[in-house]
Image 1 (spheres, rainbow, N blue to C red):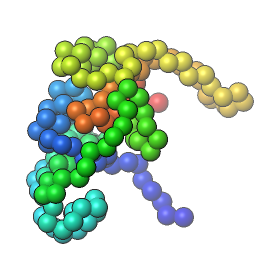
Image 2 (image 1 turned 90 degrees about the vertical axis):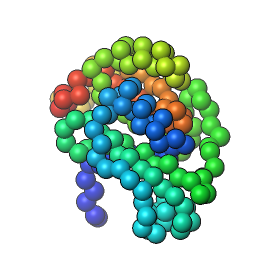
Image 3 (image 1 turned 180 degrees about the vertical axis):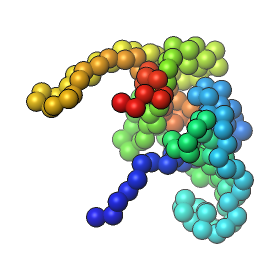
Image 4 (image 1 turned 30 degrees about the vertical axis):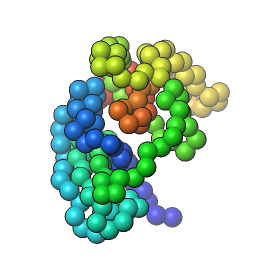
Length: 166
């Protein structure tokens, strides 16, 4: 079986590259830019199921530190892909939810409310109990929240210091 490493990034198809960049910078603090530009090689459009010649602008944003857990923002035009019909107040089958650690979910919640963004669930304490018989398993509880980016991509924040190795 092939060996697969840890996830490098999530690619999110967005309707407005600048608006989405501002959201991920201002709400999640992803201030670093790993790469940005326009995919001009024909394989770029093909890899995302678009016809050769489609315009694909991208920006890969990241937190300070190692190049992991990045978010690739891709704006496609000429032609633009159709938008998804989905619930805005919860999850849909086949939908992904990005999960990040965050040291202050309440501060993020306040920024979301101030920016009139969609909050699916405000900071709420979730208790995780260990499975019986699992050696070394420990229960914990922490605030978590779920909200949507400008195009409806769901994001789950778990309040735990981002550098905590657990």
